[in-house]
Length: 212
Image (cartoon, rainbow, N blue to C red; front, side, top):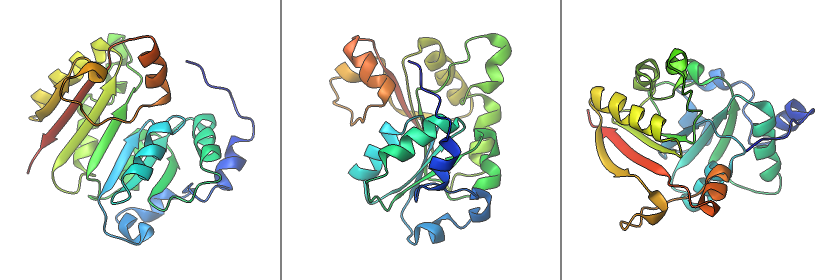
């Protein structure tokens, strides 16, 4: 699935009430920024925002932050939000490697939804479940670690099961076909996922945690 390039993406973002242009300013202060003490859920690789927007609507008892590096995709998300009034959602344009400069120990859950699989061995360190990323997550989780991952890529899923287990995560849920799982796992679909559902492609899902 390809996305259109939006030439005025930065202007769209800067004019959006959901966009945080200087996120490092709020490191350790995100609860103050949201003006509440609700748990904070972070999605890395928000894309066009279908998932994070609908999660924020469905779960007003949580705060949500969507982080995306691609300005055009995040601008598309901002445009979707133009007529909305959602108080528990913010957007950040930045590289995921920079999260330790944006957040203190204040994140409760990290979502990895249809992340780039980086299938070549030489690109392994770019995968969001590589050990180097897991170490970054350690520095922003509030207390217990909690990661939810969805992907259509079997290789990335197998890799993530291995790296997370080696990092002492426990799998609360593992599904090899989310949409046909008899457990009826609660799920909000992304743009990618809606297309894959039409194609009847299996979606791999895991819910992993590490309680300190």
